[in-house]
Length: 371
Image (cartoon, rainbow, N blue to C red; front, side):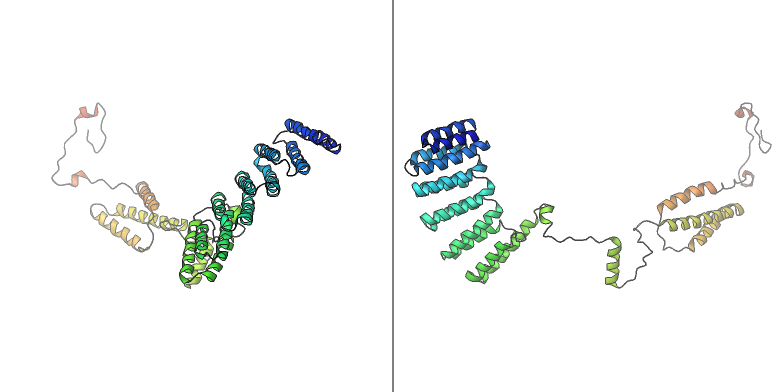
């Protein structure tokens, strides 16, 4: 691109203007958009053309601008739109200039739209009057994102207030309220508050507070990025279990032993399990000794009474541990001796009969002399 620029500048110095413009055209054919050289060539081409002919060749200048804007990427277009609009204001028609600014608002990237709409509104008010900006404000509110749109609403309401249209201004503020979070955009609600104090009454002020509460509730359900919101929100420390217990004890006036940890309901600590298991083992051993001493039917009653006496000393305030009960049943099965067999001879009304030898299959039965 530098060779094309140097050659065009050389021809311009020699007063060969059309040849210099042809050099620019040749360079644009070699380095079109989005090449950086194309942007530089178009800037010099349009600037030198306007310096040479000014307003004498308006159709040709418009054609060049239309060609440039048709090929230019949106990121680089604002500068050319401004140059085109300024040319139309100076050498062309006001209506055409406003159309250029309108095209700019629709073509520029989103980050530049707010500034483009403000320029368009200012030019419309300058050439057509204040009321002509109303449709432009409405178009801007519908096209912009929430943050810029809320600022446009404030400017729109300020314009209506200047025209003594308080109802229209209040309607604009109510519409823009849904775009402004009270926690993140306090300036909007401060401006509305001042407007109601100056131009409203008690009823409209209450309506403003109601809308503010509803908007805050609606925005509270939105999850924002933690990095974006972390700067303005204080950090909240969570309470530990010990801190919570100390707070409750201080509020209730109860002293808590810091050495004791709270037990989970329904479970038994390890120490209590060991002590209960030792007590139950002692009960089982006593019951086994009673079974050996007292035989027959009276042994069951003595066993139950002894077990009840042994267990009764512990009281019924302890928690029930299912694991201990299962373990005690297994221990009872292992430690408790089998009950003594009742002698058949001592039973009345029962006769004895010898077992045939064939039953044993040649094996001699041993016992109390029976075969």
